[in-house]
Length: 194
Length: 423
Image 1 (spheres, chains in turn green, brown):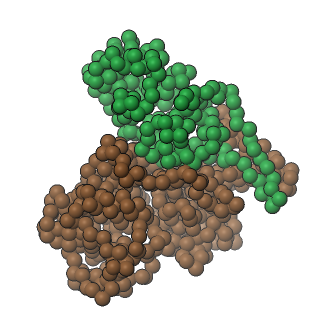
Image 2 (cartoon, helix red, strand yellow):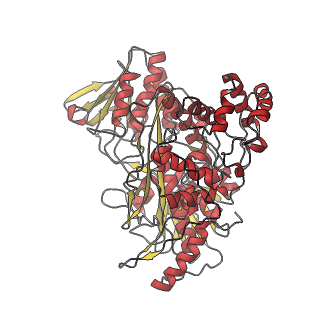
Image 3 (cartoon, helix red, strand yellow):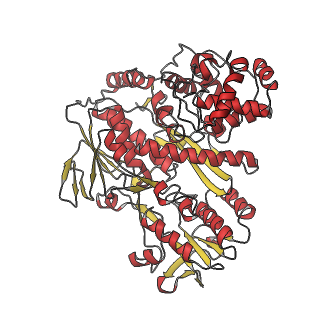
């Protein structure tokens, strides 16, 4: 299924209702919800690694699509499938807005310099069209790959290769041309973009 | 942050509606707002930091007895030798960087009526709101387990010298020895902790003292992540780890530290290393301040974590009675953020918004094998409760590849939660 829907400029309506008992009910605020992510993804979505991805600066559509994928089981997960089930669409969109408003964070990720150099050339010819500027543009809606933690990049690619996660046609075509060594080099390149 | 977040927007509209409709009393956000945080563990540190991040005009003083803190989480990896004490040590420099006044002293009195905190060092700190996060203290459920016994049979349930003591005993034990873990009754800090500890120590024994045994004497008949742990005992620690349920002779009622003997039911077990973890209650100062109920924990309002007993005091972390949230560091961190947001709102004349909480807890149970439990929590009918359908355990049949990823994510949990609490 394709969950890619544009949420840009969309602010989930604040639902505030008074019950008979006089209690005020509302969705938790975006920051309140987003702060619960920090224990694994870092304060303000800036991960200290070694594997959990940075969330700061992810585009609204990418964040929303990812969380819905976790929730619906279309995206492989260790724990995020279980956590995503705790949120409504509106709550996910609200967190998406919060993280999208933060500046993109690129972590100081350990990587192999030679592999990153080899990966740079492969990136230019095979990946740059959709993952522009070293994979650092939220506007690509393709996730932030620059300065992401290497194990997470590797898990993501392994899931794609194993068919556990659906690739776009363009990506499939690009990935099929590359050997495992070349793909690994590209991942080191993304990790090196700090 | 400079931008107006949706939360701020909600708070603004929410409090406007509330004031209009309910006549919620406006609290004047006077200058010189003061918060005192008692305890610098995961809960206290997070609360102090998040108050300062949300409103730097609030003066925050954190009072903690120890100049450096050792995290309980991941201290089981010190017992197995997989990491050193330095890696679980955190300093308070990070909090100082947020403009928090860190005072190393012991709180001796919380005067709820006078809004004052007094210390052993003779200082008095006035507050508008106080956050109490003292962690746990032990109950006397095991005869003979006194202060002296704690040195002979370490609990290692507060990390630091107790962790070092237990590690040294494990190192000194001969191959073929017996290690006993005495697991406490519910509720207690870190529900999967005793069983993760068994796995960690078993990894050490397998590598260095393979003829040894590890017995878990339990005060319970079932425990956290039980199916997954039993699978790990079978898969990784067969022939070493044995779990004895309360109903099968596991309930320990007495110990004799002079002969390293534990008494479970009618049977005496003489062991080489005894790790005795007693039943628990809220930390001493919470009891002294009259914040606890008859079960020994601090009842709170789930929206603000304000004490149900004393106004203007919020209790977070293991000491709070925040069930169904477990007594874990992640829960303490999450509760502290709810309390911090509520304190900032209340000190600025706003009504606290809806809380949202998460618990995420990893256990590293074997080589390249970790499991987790998670849950999202919210307020339902005024009570904290798990969001239906959220959370749960690592599947029993998850692949070795996914288990290995959970180890990497467990390490990420450790790095990030340390940073989020104290960084």
